[in-house]
Length: 420
Image (cartoon, helix red, strand yellow):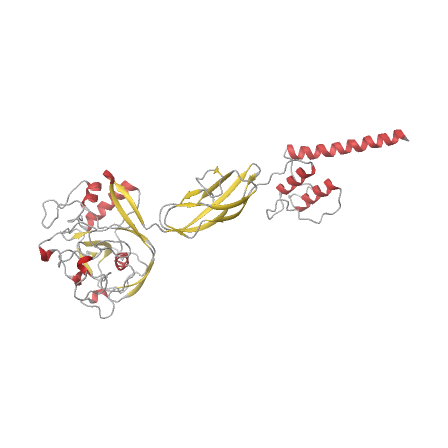
């Protein structure tokens, strides 16, 4: 009888040892966690491991051991580890991830709260994290948004020794008011961000000294874009092109910080091609809609400082005939000396006429309403210019005033302003 009991005890011990070895091999040899051989790792597998470990027929608690939202191989592994008293290490989870709403600085803070003691994080504007790499984790790491204003989506995930979390994301709006691009010789080119919006383009009913070519007034909605703070200067032209097309011409101020004059529409396009090659960016001429929208800066009056019916205020804001030609200063003046509009743009009225991308059209019937340039196919024989110049009276310098010129023509009251 005693011998039979001893043999029975030995048999039970052997079976227990075999069970332990089976569990151990599953843990250390990475054997499949499909305990019931159903073809899928699911809640039943976790239930079987828990029940087997605790000698229970049922178990009332969730089989989502790691609270990941799904029962999977990790839950089985955790149940096995718990049964064998092995250390339990969970992959981390991101429970909070916020960026803020609107920023002017592209370097933002990735505010996050995580469980599971993450050791590294990864962030990217690509949902596939293309080009990103793992960085040492912190609760508020920094991230540099891609260039260009607008809404950005940033994706974020973390990891530790047990695995990585699911990716989370948040959006943020980048609204850099200005940027400076250095040209050859460290010559600065300052750009101002013009936020998108809707405005009424053209003359308002009964506008003083206006023209029918500014009709019909219509609503235009356009996205945000970059525009140069100043008209292109001689210094900037030389930095890119290495030429001085104004040399030897009349009505020219010998100052490199005054507008580049005697440059045709064709010349402006050549400059832009060269500039884009040097910077890798996509500069262009503004559309006529963009130009007027940027000039008005939210105003509905003749000028961005008001209607100024007697032209008694404009001398503080622009160079026109009253403070240039009429006082023997017949030339384009140094940029940025007058008061800007609320977008921070200088000399939108007067100083030099500014080339636009559009072909000339008599009025706005059929014109685009999305801010794009109105371009014919084939191209027309004339191009748009806007803003008036240093030799013009107030009516020619109004926000709504339109004029045209031959694209190959270059003159002392003409220049241009960059956009992208």
